[in-house]
Structure formats: C-alpha cells, structure tokens
Length: 245
Figure 1 (cartoon, rainbow, N blue to C red):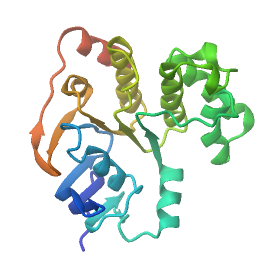
Figure 2 (figure 1 turned 135 degrees about the horizontal axis):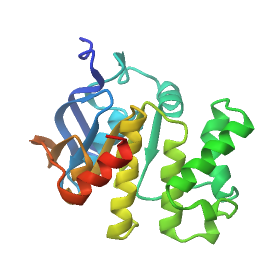
Figure 3 (figure 1 turned 60 degrees about the horizontal axis):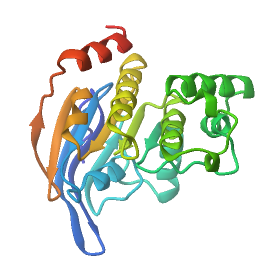
C-alpha cells in the first residue's frame, strides 16, 4: 500500500463496489488535486453517486484504496468514516435533507455549532451564505414552509458555511430550473476557488460540467477518460468575476 501524490487531496486506486451483487464500480482509479473543481459525468446508473460515496467515506469499498490527505480512508472503521465526513467534508445531494424543526438559518449554522463555533460566528456565517444563495428571506422559516428549490439552496449554503476542505455535490441542482442551476453551480465553483476548497461534482448533465477545471466520465462503472472543459462567453465572465480573477 503506497501513499498518493502529495498534491492529491483525494486519491483512489482500483475501487470496486457492488450493490446487492450488482457491480457499480469496476476498478476505478482517480486523483483529485487540492483546490480542484472536478466534474464526474455520465448517464444515470453509471456509478457517479457510488464513486462520490466511496470518495467521501459514506460507502466502504469492496476492493481498492481511498486516501484523503495521505491518510487511508479504506481502512477506517464506520465510526472513523463518520468522524471524517463530519469534520472534513461537506455534502450536497439532489435532495436537501434539512432538519425540519429548525429554521433555514439554524440549519445552515448547525454544522458550525457542532464543530465548536460560537453562536454569533455561526449565525453570521449562516446569514452570509443564505444571502449568497439568494434565500436570505427564508432565514426564519422552516423547511415545510419553503418550496423545494429554496430548500436545495439552503442545503448548498449549509455545505459551504463551515468551509470544509472538500465539498461533494451529487447532482445538486436537480430540483432547480436551468437559470437557477447555472447560478448555484457558479456559486459552488467560485466559492471553491476563492476559499481554496476542493469541489467534486457529479452530474448527468454535461452542460453543468463547464464550470469545472477538469471533467472525467463514467460509463458502466468504468472511467472512460478526461475531458478538459473550457468556459466561453458569459459563463466564463461570470465565474471569473465571482472568483475575483
């Protein structure tokens, strides 16, 4: 067992994973550089969510290795994987999974409070991210009072507010219409770049991968090759402006 390259914050070698006997990943090897915005594309059922699950310590691998910052993830116990996800990773799925009893602001502040942040700092950061995601008017409302697109933006704010080293986004814009999808992806990508976070995005929509620094594709659980996306026109201008370039 050898450690990954120093500039890879995440590194996987020969990952094999099956669900109830059905292969989902078939020997996937992948490195993710520190501060990189990486998009993983592919059709539905190609293994994108499973790959994110293995990289983020949500799922144990059947075979292979997963490393985070030169530390092995694949040898961790279930409790160890839970601590890693809580302390070092942010996650946004296609469903928001907010705490129903809490307001939007409380939901976003929650991971900061659990990490030991003071009440004032946690709520100040929550307010800032709700504003950046254009849902500041929802701050005192509970999830049941909101539409799905608002709940999803709040989930994105919750993932970004603690500024974790790595944010995993599994089809995070699925509940949104096209204009909102572009806005949220711009915010995710620009936040990652401006705060030196690593963003790993899974999407079946290749149009959304244009915000990434690099794209890889999965087909039937196998990595089929990298694509180097280039931003053009208004998309490039928007991303570079928000990122301060």
